[in-house]
Image (cartoon, rainbow, N blue to C red; front, side):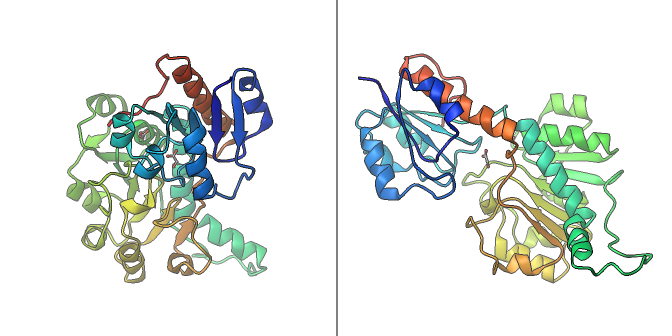
Amino acid sequence: TKPYIFITRSLPEEIVTPFQEKFNVKMWDSEEQPVDREVLLEEAGKADALITVLSDQVDEELLSRGRQLKVVANLAVGFDNIDIKTAEKNGITITNTPDVLTETTADLTFSLLMATARRLIEANEYVRKGDWENWAPLLMAGHDIHHKTIGIVGMGRIGEAVAHRARGFHMNVLYHNRSRKKEAEEKLGAVYKSFDELVTQADFVVCLAPLTPETKGMFHKEVFKKMKSSAIFVNTSRGDNANEDDLYQALVEGDIAGAGLDVFENEPISKDHPLLSLQQVVALPHIGSASVETRKAMMNLCLENVQLVLDEQEPKTKVTS
Ligand code: GLV
Ligand code: GLV
């Protein structure tokens, strides 16, 4: 019998069809609604492979159900939803989707920075509401981007791609990372700073660090207080890297000037979320890698990784603890 792959969201037929000759592929029937936990646990007990998304908790309970489970391919570069250590202990390979989403996510990060600084969303609503009656000298005046200082926290592939864009805007590029990135310093003119120096000096503080026990809540009250009162905070990594209550307070009290957020502590957020009451916040529904081309490339990479593992070969992009 053919190996069985369960996918926790509905993916386009054209992506899945080429794999159906070799595999028995079943998909959760909704593109938007998450798979029921009970269904996922049951499927994990039957499947040779799972393709999961970032809202699926691949924890000890799930991994211990997997009697014949060999691989979990996560449709994301981040894998904080997966208990990697337990997977390794149980001999289950975990893969993610780095590289294919780097430039697309950097595009979105820079767009969000610009939209927040130049108040694009607010200005668009103003025009649509019919409020535009006159030209005024400071109408929708925002903050400059060019020649300002950007501070990138988490200088991985996406961080470097954002730095590259920032150079094009003649920005001064600072970064903070667990380890020094000498080649980024040489290639991009990025300057390494301690976390404290970076948040104190940057006009734009951009978080691109993966969520780990060390980064969780790293942007908190005292950190926002250290930032310039004109600073804009941009987060396109994971919401849990910032304390959201503290961020809200910092914006209300004027410790910082604005925030561009693609990620939140508890996603999805409702329209009553306190941050949405603030004009200086631009909020997006976690769409960093969401171009049609890139999402299809991510889906293909997941399926290729699954196929490689089930054929007892090395997957392209394996995650290790
Ligand atoms: C999205 O957040 C990802 O990790 O790819
Ligand atoms: C992290 O993995 C990144 O691509 O920045």
